Figure 1 (cartoon, rainbow, N blue to C red):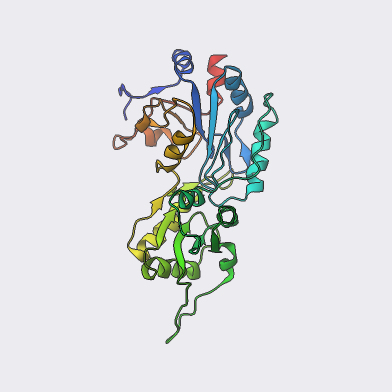
Figure 2: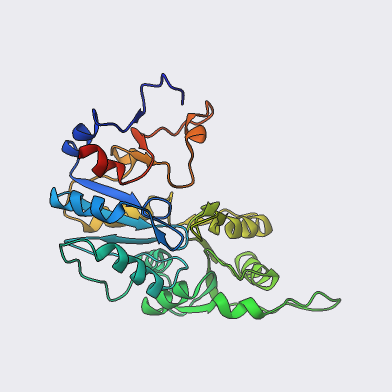
Length: 307
């Protein structure tokens, strides 16, 4: 993009009204947009409250640490990929407190990998090996599947010595890879053997984010790093069930009685918020071909510009 590009515009007092009047819903990313790490970004609660007061349907997607998605008002649908549910509840409550309209708290969230396996009618007698957090294992169990690995295997080591055979469960029919702060050589070997040696074993990635705001001060390696390691050892590409895959979008469109289409590919207007990973120099780089309709520094600019 360059400054003369007609394809993207900085959000301003002159165009914010047109944007608000032309949409029925806002779909928000959360990490780097709603919060960074464990800290809410200034101005988010009253901006969401104001949008809801205008009868605008709000949809929030929690990626990176988790791939949660919840729909306020009519429906809440959760999609977790590696973050413990109680942390997500806590962050949800922090947003909810200043918002006047009551929003029901979901009894549980559903992990997109578990949802994908359910939709694909994954055999109940097959097991799932997890390189990722406890949340994935919990949601697999909720979906009726048997999960192996996860944090428990973070303490295990692989024996690298002559005539040492690494054993793995031959009934594993899928390997799910998400963000895993406790990833190690044991997990990489286990997942690799399952994918390479178990006939028909699926290789599923929760997302391929390279970095994420795991804390409010720094970016950290994302799930994409773990996924790339398994890609390298198996020479296979994963089925991605989180962003940028359309799986979640397709699932929602099947279940929502609405004409909202999500993302540029579905014909939506797009707004890049520069409080996340993407910076203005990255956006303006001539090699960048992904251009939003609008860009701004933070979510609360919506409220400030309308005021």
